[in-house]
Image 1 (tube, rainbow, N blue to C red):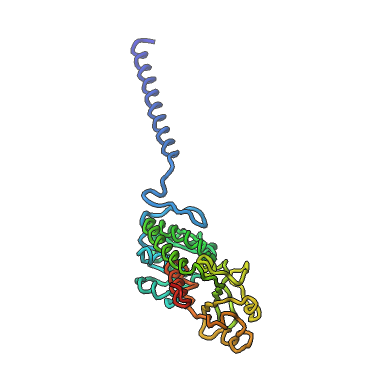
Image 2 (cartoon, rainbow, N blue to C red; image 1 turned 90 degrees about the vertical axis):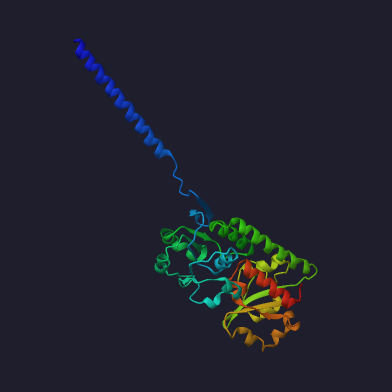
Length: 317
């Protein structure tokens, strides 16, 4: 091999090595890029909820909610939802909530929200309920990031947990903590006034078909027991349906009726001599309150309305 051929061969080998090194470097870069985890939540929140973990923008601006209690929460955080599953009936919002609530689009029933209409709103965040919306969760999360909370079956303690999740989801975590502290202070003030007031209280939804007590497994019942009142039902069922005879046996010292209709079964029972045997009836402690305030709102505003009603009706300061 002459000198020129050796020189050309040397250049060829050097070129191959150089190309090989460049290729290896590119491969390493590509592999590194593939191995680097993609930050799906850059500049935002990761929210843990009943159906998993959802990545959200830091401050979602277009929020759709599928329960009344979520509206209660958003009003305390000064966040206006663009869409609400309000059962096509704005009258179901308690007055304090309606006063703060701006314009929104109704997306129909909480049980079967209008998915097409919801999608047209192009929300940044959907807040759904585990009991009502588990089956459509996959549909909802294709429309927008969705968090699912155990709300409809929640007791008071669960509501407080849900509230902080919502506050974090809408970028108002610190505001939520401060508002919750104010709520706790109001409860503590009522408890101080109830220090020596031992009483069994029975909240119940009534309609023409029945008397549905709210035990301490329900939202309202659990809230009352958290205040120090006793639950006279002692039922594992959240909403046991009581006959008049069972109500007499339960014998609550105060009854708070939440009528779902203008005329209810209590109108019939009140003509029965058994009704007069109930301690609450004897002592004129049967009160009528708004179902939307006590049973539907299920949030800080709703709970504080319950406190006000208890204070006014029972004379607690």
